[in-house]
Image (cartoon, rainbow, N blue to C red; front, side, top):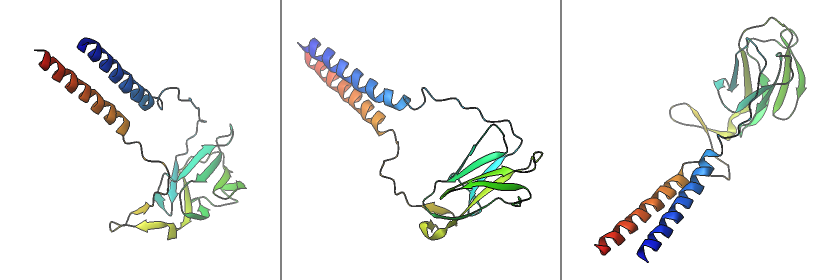
Amino acid sequence: MKKLLSIILSLVMMVSVGALSVTAFAETVGSIETTEPVTKNKIIPQVNGNNSNDVTWEWVSENPKQIKFTYTGDGTLESWDFGDLEEGVDYKVIDEGDNTITIELLDQNYDGDIIANAVVDEEEEETTKAGTTTKQNKSQTSPKTGAAAAAGIAAMGAGVAILTALKKKED
């Protein structure tokens, strides 16, 4: 009976750890491969003059000179600034939405950096003592911290402890 119980417990632990491991690896498997046009331009996304991941960009067409920029932060977008580029001379605005803008470079030989600066109302951001800005997390989802994997390892450890205790009682 004890051997049957230990086999059942080990099977339950293996299934639990396996189920938790599959969800951890699901994000890396099956990713879609994308190709971007060949360009010499380095695109630098910024918010209020500081490099940021709150501005995303993508190529609009096969022409590597049309770029769509999107502001994804929590602040209120006021305008866009493209550094040294001058509107009407270096680029033209093709489309502009609430938090997006699509531009086309007019100079086909331009190979400099493209700075896409989203000018944002700073009321939504808080400034820390170090002078860096942090945003409040208003998301309803918890961060992926590996708690599921830790719970699986803890369950496996508990199963091993139970099996060890049962073995010691047999001896």
